[in-house]
Amino acid sequence: MYLKDLASGMNLIISNILVLVVVLRGLPLCVFKK
Image (tube, rainbow, N blue to C red):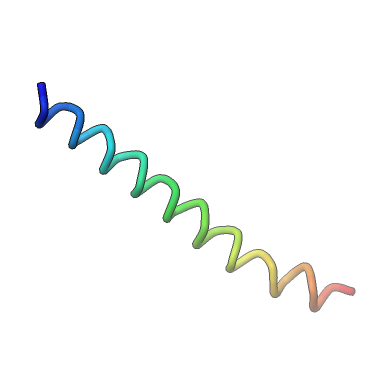
C-alpha cells in the first residue's frame, strides 16, 4: 500500500515538473511576441 502511494505521489510530482517546464518554455515566447 505504501509503495503504491509513493509511486502515485512521484507521478504527481513528475507531471507537475513537466507542466512547469512547458510553462517556463512558453513564457519567453509570449513575452517576445509582444
